[in-house]
Length: 82
Ligand SMILES: [Zn+2]
Image (cartoon, rainbow, N blue to C red; front, side, top):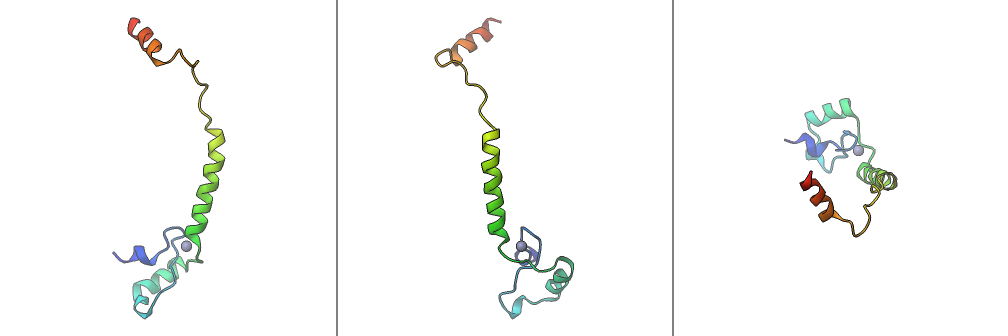
């Protein structure tokens, strides 16, 4: 409990404190080990995810579609015969 809200989920840096209560010993240690979060990580991560999604889409083209009309029922019948 605790450290998750203190650490940035993206860069694992310590997010800026919102008040005096946020300054604790464990938080100070985390700042030393992880450093501060530069901010805007969530937005950047979202942007990156969007870009990878856009890049991935054309590569994952649907496999050549079966001839329209000669659809699943016929195949299923062949499979059943074999
Ligand atoms: Zn961050």
